[in-house]
Every structure is written in structure tokens, then in C-alpha cells.
Length: 472
Image (cartoon, rainbow, N blue to C red):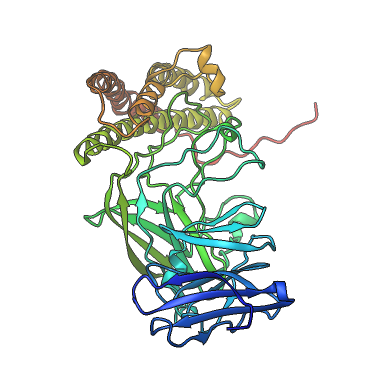
């Protein structure tokens, strides 16, 4: 203990009654050396614990992690330090914290909260990887940390992003994993067909995937998704959080699962009002996260806890989830039908283009018009074909797909059991959807088959050589 040293903080161990840590500063005596002392015998003897802290960075505060007794944090005049071995060695934990005096700090739940002098608060969200870290992890090729319990509380992002306001912690389950070396994505290899412009190579399988499983072991979400979602012009103003991406950098990587199940099948460039095709939020309970890297899998338990502020039963949350899942599946029925209709229409158009100036053109084109008319009737009952942006739904009435997604928006707008009216609306819309899907299946079984048979009878070749231009 230096002469005239000021004891700025004494931190008692949360586990050992005889252990305490003391931060001492002496900068008023022109001594800027760091001083941290530790006792294990109720203060009879003390040892110095400052190895790794620069000589000119005096210490204001020292704290012990309440769950990991060997994890210490120290606030100094110019920043923050961490020790994984009970203060035997310190290293900087500066990250994006600007050089500033750290006068106090506290571990609150899973976060590290730092108070600076005259600046602001700095929060390191979810220090679970620090609590679970050991020197052996750095030697492993891959390590999946056990996620901290996620809260069913969802922090909705603001309507407009701004650089002048703080950010809420990530909404969902934070999943951290360590990669010893960076993993580069596979590059597409061109084959002979692609060189000639006649073939497109398949997208290579990702080297890193993440699956979320429920308590029964069923996969409920997989990342990366099969298809990257295209962003429509209206989406930058959406209140909904976008799913994160799996990074493959060397060192610590972080991914946030938004607690949602897989979404419904999506119709591209189809704006929705008051709802979306996203899957329902998982109810509180036990899940699993499985990380697969280069064919080898790593699994960790994952728990979702209920929002402690709300007085709602697990049964009511389950009722809400069950209805939202039914809405999702019914939306998939609609969107699959729409996608099939539009894909067939594209094929019919392509056939007509190929048969231009061909004697078989009129017969097949007339049959295609008859089929398209029947397909359009089903399509227009399922989706508003005139809507091209989210504002168009103000001019053109929404159809069954948007009515169902809007119902999902109402049911999922708060943590509560669905109302009786929500069930009644779902039943009403379901009957209408089932009727149109049944009509479509009938068209596929008769009209589509008839059109296909006609094309075959006309002996339309798979390849038709483009006629050369004569210049006349």
C-alpha cells in the first residue's frame, strides 16, 4: 500500500467471504502507477495484481464477475482491462470504447456496464463468451459457446435508424462461436456448359451452417437460408428486424437468432400491408443450437425465458404460437399456388415465343390463353396482382394472402392468447383459401395436363433453332 494512496474501491468476492480486491490510486501525488491488491485472509495480507496494465494507467475500479470468480474487470484512467486468471495477468478490453476514465463498472445480468467520467455509459452486451473462455478454447479449431438464456422480450427497432441515438441490445438469442482460422466461402466453378452460356452452376453448399432445434430435436430454423431474401424498395423503412448472417472470421463470431421459426413460402416482389411471411416467435422453453463447420457438428443447449414483466401463462403463449403456425402454413399453401401459377405462365409464354412463325403456334397459343384465363381467376382471388408497392394496397383491395398475413400481424402484435374473433377470422379465410387451392389442383389435374398433352401431340421440339435474319 503506497503512502497517501487513495482507496477508490473495495470489491468483496461474491463466493469467498475472506477474499476481496482493492483499487488504489495516487495520481494526486504525481504517481500514475496502477495499484490493485487482493486478500484471501480477511485483509491480514495482500498481494499485488497489476501485471499487464501499463505503468502510466492508474486504476479507479475493480470488479469480480458474479458467475465466474476468476474473471475480473478493471477500470483505469484511459480504458478497460480484463483478466481471466484472477488478476494474475491483465489485457485490454477496449473494443470501440474511446480512451476515457472508467470510474466504475458493474456486471448486470449478462452485460458489462461501464461508467466514464463526463462521457457516457458503455455497455458490452452479453459477456457469456468471456465467462466461458479458457486458454484451451483458443487452441480448438471450432468452439460453440453455451448461449446465455434468451428473453422472450423483443426490443422493436425504431421506424427510422439514426446515428444520434443509442442501440438496444440484440433481440433474440445470442450465439457465439470461435473459429481458429477464417473460412473462405467456396467460389463457383464454371463448367463447360456455363462457358458457352447454356448452364448455370449450382450454388455450393455453405461450409458453416447453424440449426435451431426444439425440445423434441426437430429443426425449426436453419441458417443460412436456402435463398437470400431480396429487399424490396419499401423494406428499409420496415420495423421488423432482419435476420443476421453467419460470419466465418478467425476468432470470435456472433450470430443472433430472432427466436422465429421458419417463415412461410414467399412470393417475390409481392408487397404486404400489416403483416409478413415471417414465422412465429418460439415460446419460452428449451431448445438446441447446432453449429456445423466443414462437416463437423457442435451442439449447445439454448433456453428462452418468459418476459418477466408480463403476467401471461405458458398455455396462452402456446395458443398464440399454435394459431400463428397455422397462419404460416396456410400462407405457404397460398404462396406455393401463386408461384406455381406464375411459373407455368412463364413456361407458356416461352413456348409461344419459341413457336413464333410456326404453323403450330396458333393452336398452342389458343390453348395457352384458355389455361391462363383459368389460372388468373385463381391467382386474383389469392393475391392482388395490381399491387407493386406497399402503398398500392391503399388503391387496390387486398386478397387472401394479405388478409391472412394481416391477421398474423394482429395475433402476433403482443404476448397474449388470440381473441375468439381471431379464430373466427382464421376459419373464414381458411375455407376460402382451401376452396381456391382445390380449384387450382383441379386445374392442374385437367387443364394443365390437357395443355401438356396438346404440346406433346404437336411434337414441339425441346430445341428450336433461331431463324437467321435476312436483312430485307
